[in-house]
Length: 365
Image (cartoon, rainbow, N blue to C red; front, side, top):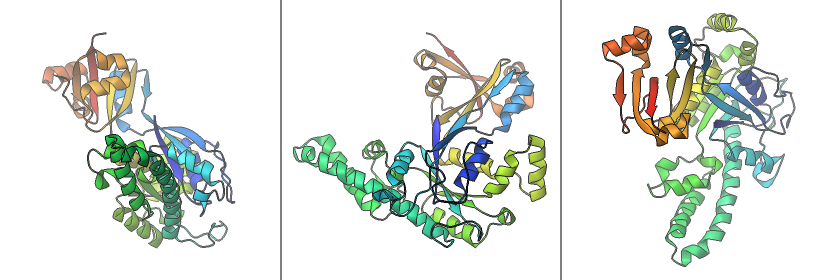
């Protein structure tokens, strides 16, 4: 399952956001640093309005959406890479996730303590990024010391790794997140990914604002958005307090509340969709009377690979994939109608599964 870590300085709203994400009170939230010590973990369904429509059309018994695991990681502070606060423990937790959501405080509130004594989003971002980069740099230098001897002996794999490690060391000294695909050659990319550095993970900056700034943002959010753009990252504006209130409401009440605020979708839904965009993920669907099931695949996945997400036997024994585009199914209303209109088709091993494809796999064990 996809894992996303929520990070940030103490008292920026991470645990409040986590509570809202998981629609539960199992993440403690309080107005003092290091309130979160052990990471809280919650599994969150990915919002997909297509599933309810398909359930009604297929008269299915249940919906099984795809999901993301969110990890609420304790607040980092300056010096975390050297063990300040509870540094090393937290940094280990970040290494285990696929993407990072960095929550940035973009609101003024004299009743909520800021660990640095003032609200400055760019300073906060730099503090986090610097600590992650310093911790990664220590790992790279340690690895270089071990692998250099092998490289000197002429080992081709070791020579390539040393080349990658030296590039990484240079980039980490700039204290910023690294897009592996932009900075490394094709043969270097697998080596860089294997090292699993925190600074190479995709990032979304969540600008946490006061309720009054949810629609327009403020000067702080403009700074965060500009920083994100210049570093190839994404930004989502959220009011963690509003999201926590929405989590207490039923679906219809939540819609009414959002309408009153003049917002089309909740910040959390936009954030989850941003994670999918950031990680270049797609959703395909299996649909029948028993269940409507959403499955996650990387963009560009071919039919056998998608089949393997359901079961390895499906991939091994893959014969054909019966494909019905969601839009056609929603318009025509049934498999029978889709086949009659010729929109359902059979595809082979080279077919790239598209987002929203309704798929039935044919396979032999």
